[in-house]
Every structure is written in C-alpha cells, then in structure tokens.
Image (cartoon, rainbow, N blue to C red):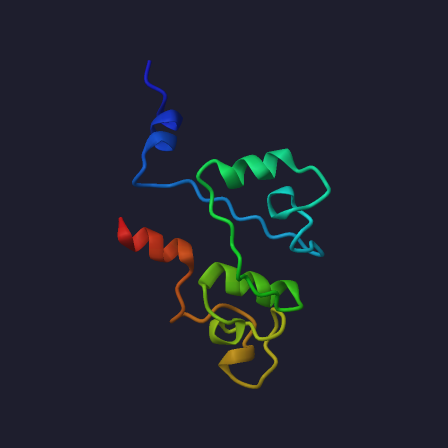
Length: 112
C-alpha cells in the first residue's frame, strides 16, 4: 500500500521548511550556537542538512520581526512598521502585509 505522506516527504523538489522564531531567545541560547543549555532536538535539525540563520535581525516587536521573516524584507517595506493596526501614516505602517510584497511561501510556490 502506497503512503502519500512518505512520498511527499521524500520529494526533494518540495523541501520541508521549519522556521523557529522564539521570543526572548538569545543568539547563544541554543546548543548549535554554543549554549550551555542542551537542545538536542534543535541541534539535530540544524546539523541534519538544516540552515542556521546568522543574520536575522530582531525588530524589537513580534509583528515586524515575523513580517521580515515571512517576506525577507525590512518590516516597513512589508507594511508592518509597528504592529498589526493601521497607524494612518502610509503603507509602511498599514498593519498588514502589502499586496506587492510576496512571502517566502508564495515565492516557493511560483517556482513549482
């Protein structure tokens, strides 16, 4: 009997992507970055063909940080310069992702 889930996992043209964004986590709080705290599961993900970001910039608030991570652009370029409400000062503070800024998922979908 064929297992569809295993077929999807094994398909290298559609990679599995896991991004972990944790609030109040320091750069060296994870084992693979030199922490004294043991984080074997995260370390395993990082060492087993994973990519470790070394230049992700924190935007001091969760909404702009997540907007940057989702789109790959600065939060103001994405339309979330502060939080998720319209500050009434233009598209950089509109509080939701701009329609002309694609997310990483949308870009990956266009490739296939």
